[in-house]
Structures are given as structure tokens and as C-alpha cells.
Length: 363
Ligand code: PEP
Image (tube, rainbow, N blue to C red; front, side):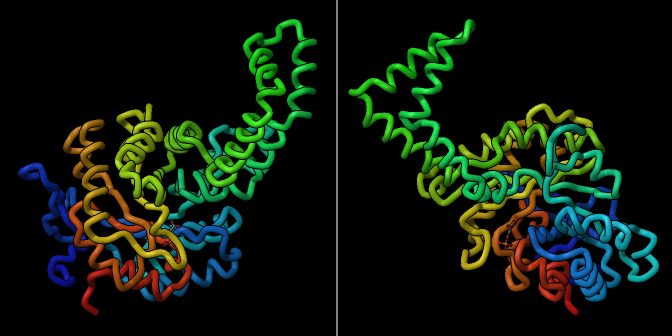
């Protein structure tokens, strides 16, 4: 029997009746039963040594747990060390868990090799035992852009000096684009001085705040990872502005349609989706409410149903992320559309993440 609190199912089937998704409790190991996925994204934290210590403490707390999947996502530098530690034979012997512990990378590049300084390919990750890769995290889609200086670099290119030099270089080319020449001449005209300054300021600000990975780049990463045999945690989520402007569903639909475009049917089963509203992530933010999570997860699942059919939509795991903690995970897991969590801050503390993994269990 399940040793869990009423209404908090550790394993379940998902059914759709009267246009609504619901969970029906299952025993662990029953064929086709869904296993929740609790994934820790350590972000840029932990050395290989401290990561190993964290994992060891976590496995002590989670000894004997076999009914959920656990993902550990160290930075690239910690992957190999952790891979040696968590591969099944070791853990099975030590902790009676293991086949359900997976190694996560936090990103991947879509090209397989070449002059891409600082990037890591799917092949490289697979070769060291990585099981799954997080793709499209909001840190990469949006937040990190402000550190890369795209905004100031665009503002500089929209200066009078830069455009004047570019125009004269362009005019010397035999195959110069006449439309580009016209546009530059127009922008540089004395009467358009203010337009140019306004454009530089607007685009500079936009790119400073928002420039990050595009849906197209994310899609290429998803395809590269899946083709290499890696599983994917595909992140999506709206920022505060989109939520306040009632654009959440439109934005999520774009992210999901574009991000998962062209994934062949044979590989779609290797995708887990994580819904992570940006405004709910990180220190000081409040998690989304039960109702907000429920509404969005139903929306995503219905979209997946349109794209890949009802049977697959019932089984795909859709995680929630955004201030998941030991004290809210059980409630979040009662939501019919939620199959686990992508956890940031709380995954850095073995006791907190351990309690999240043990959600709903009566000790
Ligand atoms: C995250 O960054 O993916 C995340 C969910 O962080 P936190 O749990 O700290 O809100």
C-alpha cells in the first residue's frame, strides 16, 4: 500500500473525463503509472566536491525511495564527478535507490563540434553519463542577457558615427544591399536625428533587459539533445509583464510550439516540460498559487493533446518550478496536471530537497 497522505499520490494514472484531467492513485511500479520527477537545478553553485557531499546527504535522507525520479543538475564542472557517484550500481548497493536518480546538465549547444569556445555539445554530455538536459531555462532565455551587454552594443551601433562609417563601407561594395543603403541614409538625415537617438535608447533597453536565447536556438538545442539520446527538461514560462497583460497563454503557446517544433514522434516521449513563471522564481518571490498552476498546466496539457494526441498528453510529465519548498510541494502535487517540480534554491539544501522528494510520505 501507499504510505502517503490522503489525496497526495506518489504514483498515479491520469485520465480525462468531462474535459478535465484528473489523477487516479496507483501503486508504485504498476504498469503505466506516472512517476513524479523531482529535479534540482543547482545553477552556478557547488564545486565537484561540495556537490558530491550534497548528493551523499540527500541519498541518506532518501534511502529506499524508488517511486519517484530524482534529477540532480550540477554545473558542467560537477557532472563527471557526480556521474561516477550516482551511476546505478553504486547507488543500488549503498542506498537501495539508483535507477531512479538521473544526472542533469543545465544547458547544451546544438552544434556537435567546432569553433564554439565555451560551449558543450550533446555528444560530450552523453559521453560522460548525463541523462537529461535542462533547455530554455528563464535564466538563459531572459535573465542572463543583461550581463552580456547586447543592449549597449546595439546602442553603439545605432550611433551617428558608427552608421556613417558603415554607410561608406557599404557603398564601396559591389553587391551592396540598396535597401540597407536607403535605410541608413534615411536614419542619418539631419531631420531624423531624434528618431535615431530614440531607437538607440529603446532597442538598447529592450536588449539589455530581454536578450537571451531565442525560441529558434532553444528548438535547435532540443533537437540536438534528443537525437543524441539525451532526455530533455524543456522550460517555458511567462514574465510578470506578460501575466499582467493577459498574454500568458499566447506566450506559452509560442514557446512550446516553436521550442518543440519538429520533434519526431519517436523522441517526444523523452521530453518533460517545466512550467516556470519568471515572477515566481528565486529569493523573495512568491510561488504561483494553486489555481494559477492548475490553470496553466491544464492549458499546456491541452496544447500537447492538440499536437500529439490524448494518450500522450495524459502521460507527459509537466513539472512546476518557482519557489517549490518542503512546505508547499505536497499541495502542489495534489494538482491534477502537475507531475513534479524543477527546484532551484531548495535543491541546494539536502534536508529541503530530501523533504521535497519525500512529499506526502508519512514518516
Ligand atoms: C529555477 O530557477 O528554476 C527555480 C525554480 O528556482 P527557485 O526554486 O529557487 O524559485
